[in-house]
Amino acid sequence: MRAILGGTIAAYRADPAYRQRPDLQRELERIGGRLNQPMRIALAGTLKAGKSTLVNALVGEDIAPTDATEATRIVTWFRHGPTPKVTANHRGGRRSNVPITRRSDGPAQERGLTFDMAMLDSDDIVDLDVEWPAAELTDATIIDTPGTSSLSRDVSARTLRLLVPDDGVPRVDAVVFLLRTLNAADIALLKQIGQLVGGSSGALGVIGVASRADEIGAGRIDAMLSAKDVAQRFTAEMDRTGICQAVVPVSGLLALTARTLRQSEFVALEKLAAVEPAALAKAMLSVDRFVREDGSEAALPVDAATRAALLDRFGMFGIRISIAVLRAGVTDSVALADELLERSGLVALREVIDQQFAQRSDLLKAHTALLSLRQFVQRNPVYATPQILADIEPLLADTHAFEELRLISQLRSRSTTLNPDEMASLRRLIGGSGTDAASRLGLRADAPDDGPRAAFAAAQRWRRRADHPLNDPFTARACRAAVRSAEALVADYARGR
Image (cartoon, rainbow, N blue to C red):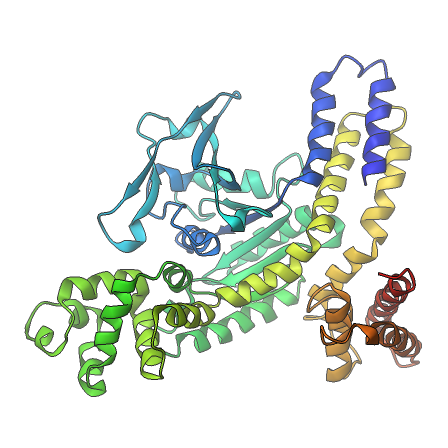
């Protein structure tokens, strides 16, 4: 990729028609610079899907406003920076600082940071750039987008301009799409995003989230089980068109609360957990019954204001899960936070993001850069354009790592003649459980000496399986990809990796 980019820059510098066009030189440098920057992950979805709450949960701090202010109607980039800073990028290129304020009143989901937009015209702002010293932003820039189903056409258009721009040049490397339902509009948008982010390769960097998962089960203690069923249904429906690599159920509110759990909340929950189960269950039959200040309060050792605050922070599902965990023997706030984080679905989502995005960040960034470079040379042709395109197209079409990503998505929706053990082995070998050699070969981390033998055995096994006379074309293609993955591991071990 860097060699192609260097050759392209040299070709434009040598062409008399472009020699005096510093704007084009800057654009080429911008495309190349993306390779050295953190991966860009956009969070998208319908209105009130919980995008800002999920941003906060992923970062572990209340930095994305969740209240219905002007800031939530604007695309916001969250990047790593040494000190907190918010900048508004205006139409025409002007930039201005945006004051940061912290709200401490109102419901918990409307607290945290908010941006003071009083002196700014939101219609004149292209996007907001937030710098924040969070470790989670070191390797990934997270982009929060307005709801795609907003009643304001301009608000929805801001998201569409980022995810499916008219010029066809990708602005992001990967997309996390939050779903509360799955309708025709969602599917159509996901297809557009997949075509742009992945080009002809399809959904290289698109995963789904069944968001606000705790609400799917109406706050019952088994709500996440219901959410998992919904996520599986979403996955099955979307896999038919190959527009998404995975769908994970997540309760963003519970995840954020787990990452920011306060000792005072733990103490209040401990008191509730000590209440006789039948009496507490009666008090928690409904939200109104749980927070009201009438005679029911006498049976609970936590005052109504504290109960209301817990409800804002945890939701009814989070309170019920917390009490169940405390009754099961958890005795400190750290252990409770860890348990809630696991049950929120955020741990599973981060594992998927790590496997599908982070471990392949160089690949996804290179893919974005190749698509951008192709668009650039097609819009600004020079004598070397045919040669440049001839170098780009094979990389987009034939790179084995792209093929692995395509197959990880397609194996969920396409039928094969592989048995379940073969399917699990193949998915693991092409990187479905991690891209390091041990994960691909199913080896323990403490048994590195088994690697060369296991890689050679895998190459032989899948070479035989690829030649099976009853293979359908897709199964044969998947087996050949497994052979290439195994052979690459053999070669790596031979080089002494």
